[in-house]
Image (cartoon, rainbow over all chains, first blue to last red; front, side, top):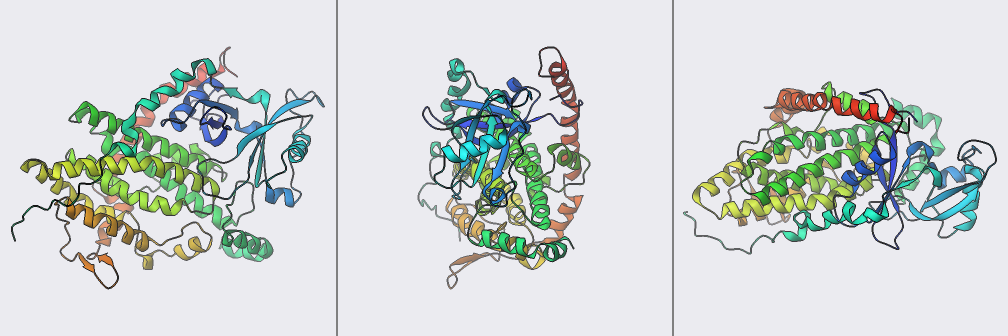
Length: 186
Length: 317
């Protein structure tokens, strides 16, 4: 990937946010950035201005293989492009994400685990076999080698400041006082 | 018309698509969708993104003049949120096959629309509070409706934005309620702000249903689940009693509670003013666009530096 011309579009990166230890990383949206480190900083500003983040992952949008249930039903599955450095049938680790509910939400697919496969198509087949229930509405497969994580050792410095900014919380503001009608001139 | 061609070419797919929406399913990137559904979403989402970005300007002008450190922190956080909301929305638009760059270019060239309300001036500090209470209050009503939208990425952006904007609304309400029960000059400042922002806030929810030709199709495809007038009525019903309770006078002599319907009815909206502002001739259209262009121009060296760094030996190249 190359950085675009000065006023062009920086590459797009998909962002995954983890709200607490033990919870899955969830796809929250994307940012534009010149490199993974820049993408993580942009991701923190855009998606972690509030508490409830302990880790971020970013991956180049072009590395993500996305398939919906409708595409699968129509036989519209991704091709067999090899992962990693493109040297053919070498096996690579893929992180598996899926969406399983139409409920209203602020996140898209959730991280459920990983598979090892020689191509995106093989990874999708392995993911469908490994994580069959409940029926998935959308799958994302992300080569593990393309993912950059926020540094765990610096998680406090990255995410704790948002917790102290309580003035961003609705609960900080007193409700409208009850009726205290002043006498008004008729 | 694009819709007719789709109907002719893809009747079965359109039927399946509308059945999915009727079942309450979300349409996701990669799913089949009519060209008109995509076109309408790009139009709405990009206008919405531009509104968030331009919306930083009227209040941003008051950051350096906030009356206390706390109010400054609150306003900084609010304006930063609006910038973030613009980014969520550009992302949602990008899932439909457009780029953030082309959308921003349309804004900078004056070809793109954004919310009419941001073309009005912020003349006093109370305007910051009144924008939070009324403009964000109206936006939240609209965005709660759009959070039900059938297109997954737009719906998710709206859920996230509503969760954050609730604080914008509350801080504005709290500020105005405090001023409305304060000194005579504070009360006058709050009342003056209400008089200038009330009608623009009603207008920002869009033309009357009779002048919204897209609404029936947008409703059938689950993009809009309520009409402009329905959302406007919700806004009026929520805010009139609260403003009155705060001791402020709403500048509408025809405003009254209709016991039969259980709703507040308001006087006629000046749609000539609305269309004048939408078409670029509002009080500050030219200034807003000039400020956005200047910000883009002034940030150019940063973009160039980032690109040079990435292209160097250390970047991903």
